[in-house]
Length: 491
Image 1 (cartoon, rainbow, N blue to C red):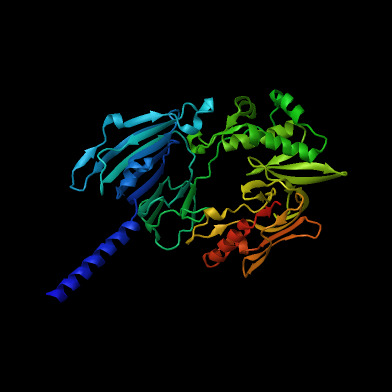
Image 2: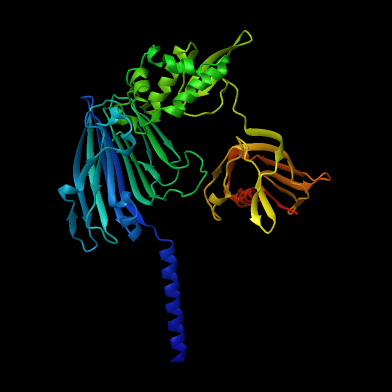
């Protein structure tokens, strides 16, 4: 009997530990199904149908995340008709709780509040009801859009796992469709059925919660029927901007062009909405300037219009403009990126793989009293330096990390108060194969000053730290960060 009791006790403990382990790693929710269906009609309209069936597993999915207990549907009443096909909650006992009529609330999207011409857009909030553990929220709606343009990128990864994801495209047989699949290897099957395109994805893992992720790491499908709105005018006079251009003028043409770009970036409000909501159309540059706001496309077009009105020859690009600058009698073309204060670069010249910084400065002691006769001074952070905060680097990471390679050299000579002594001399060098080298030297010289040398060379392939290199990279960043201050003893 005693032996049997021990066996039962061990089995019970094993069951408890297994239960705790499963709770620790449980998901908040799981999508049983997501279906997106786009139907291009012959009358120049498009029907967009969306269906989700999401099972809520934990309290946090019900109370902490509005996108689980609620759904937000963006639409434009000027071109869209929104219809709710089904909305209910299926309880674990099999009963169904229908979403009441007062749980459908139309409101102004938050991003449109600061731009008057988008005040007609709407966001329908569907407040799901009857939520409890293991319930399934079902929502099915259709947007009938008066537009002939289909240009969608569908990311298949969500913030919780997806058991099945369907992407369906229906269009007339004589209509051209351009479909691009990215990262769709593995459990992604393209069915050859009655639809023009039908992709079924199974068991998609949830999105990664990590910092410094590379772009485009998730599976996605981009579909386009090649139609575009009528382009805006190649040149639009902007007398409304005369005073602004006059204030921005400097004698250096490249600095002048950059100042115009920076003005748009700094002073005009960017409205981040899907361009499909406005039928992919932009407004005139004058209207964008007058209203002080616009979509990313509006602001890019305004940047080009301002440059041309200021007398520059430039051609629009997908990211900004190619601006012709005359230097010493020679016309040079510079790539100027809009919506970013990235320095201009000569067109056709590749972006350097490594950012190079070489700084040599004399600093006066500017420390803070930390008690006991000690003072601590943080070393300066130079513009353009590697901006990776080790506090955001988790101890375990499976996702790759994206950065820009660098070659940074700093030398500081710090003048100390009389009779002060360096407390923490440093002589540290770390070299990791496939990553680079870090060197920090801090010493007090014979004349009482502190000499600081900090060097960081990161050179990873394609600017991506892989899983196998991550721990070594994290350790190097922690060391680099920890040696960014000086402590002295004041006599």
